[in-house]
Image 1: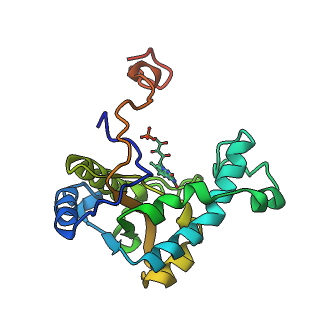
Image 2: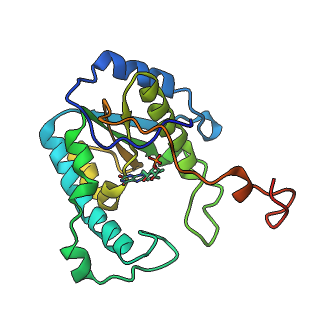
Length: 212
Ligand SMILES: Cc1cc2nc3c(=O)[nH]c(=O)nc-3n(C[C@H](O)[C@H](O)[C@H](O)COP(=O)(O)O)c2cc1C
């Protein structure tokens, strides 16, 4: 957990199916709401499909990088973008999508919304509960990959173009695309991750209670 950082650059070493099978076989023990196990993984090796996924990720990446360049928290649901369409269009999104082309394999990880219990569905805010039935699995994939000497990163830029991703891969309407994960042998293995210390985000008894 302390050394599984994002990997976006990969060597040419193969990630064979038997290793990937082991990674997925360990990851499948992730929890899901009510143990409904609505995760579906599409294993993509075809370079043409990966190119399509990279292209579908580009518009989202352009907006992300344009907003980040403007000092904003990109794609934030509470604040509309402070950059105009022309600025987004002129921004280079390619650094954010290269990992999909350089990886040995790309996993498109989907969630069957028809089996999800979303207890926040009637609240006046963006949903978060549904994601909890798929992202523990995604993290398990990354931990299991690290255990085998491989790495990757959850990417989400393609999700802004979910209908096109669905058409590309034949994903049924009831399934949401949760993430697109490139996997391969890391060029560099970062082992020192930057994270807030416990005292900065854990409090006793109340949100505004003393630091734990
Ligand atoms: C929900 C989620 C979405 C993410 N989307 C992207 C993405 O689209 N592209 C990307 O390069 N990294 C993406 N990341 C990776 C984060 O940028 C990364 O986890 C974070 O910066 C910490 O990096 P580190 O573990 O290397 O320190 C995403 C991570 C999460 C958890």
